[in-house]
Length: 360
Image 1 (cartoon, rainbow, N blue to C red):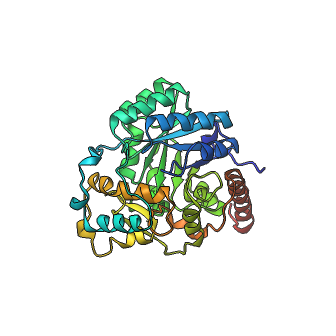
Image 2 (spheres, helix red, strand yellow; image 1 turned 135 degrees about the vertical axis):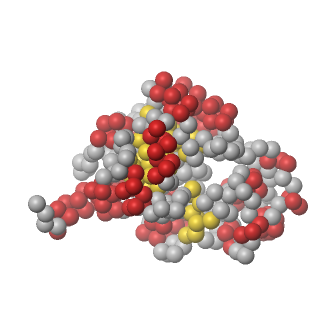
Image 3 (spheres, rainbow, N blue to C red; image 1 turned 180 degrees about the vertical axis):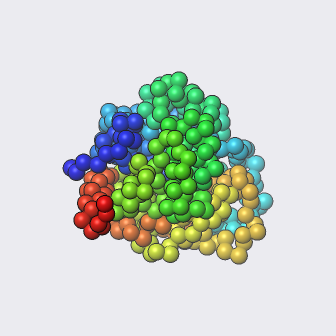
């Protein structure tokens, strides 16, 4: 393997500055363990699963690797409550349409136990991380000081995931050891500013290592971001198309088939902006933007259809969060092989740039 190292590697105890994103429904114990074992930082998605499921996934990952692991927990200011209170006949018309179409395919849509990022839920998951001596916790949708302080008291490093310079300032002020800045190119929850600009904005004031995220699927991209000043990258979509990710073959095929204009950024997923691949799940909302509910009600309304379609791996009706880099992903590989290829591509790109560009 080639050598690729930044100061971030020593801070997090990893060999390569490539961090696998904590993607909901995708990144559980098998994927996190494979990435960490290969020298990156594997992350377990812990926003929606119950604390019991998080405990199980950490145990599974620990059984497969003794390398550092990260757990991604949500800390939003607002959290959904009382999922059962939303009656089908009171839901927006597009949601009702999704329910009818999914059930016509033989998939039963039921209320779900979506933990939905409540603070008590987050605290319970933190305690599980501390019990298992997890090395790194990633904070999504907010990096509260109380959570950072709790992690530091247990020797845990904290990554704040942000989509704006303002939120990066807040995460650093609250004590985050690392900030991940995700440009609008990224999949899942994402802001409005492109990665190259956002990274430059945050590097002007950052006092901690900055990690770049958003549309990153090739080593040449990583090389460019490292030369801009990032100390590492947070990679999501490329790791969806791995043998160890938890999504079904239809989701992976949708990424492999994605063209350059395949994704949209919309509030339809949960009331916050999410980038995802266009399909029937997004199409039913065309012309119905006014019917979308604010967060967290939109999340509550969409969760039953979203979870049912994902569990059945429906080709056209499941939510497919993905970054714009999906158009450059064309295969499904073991996660370790993906990491190795990214490292080798990055080193080759850095060497080629040195040979191609004259400077003094």
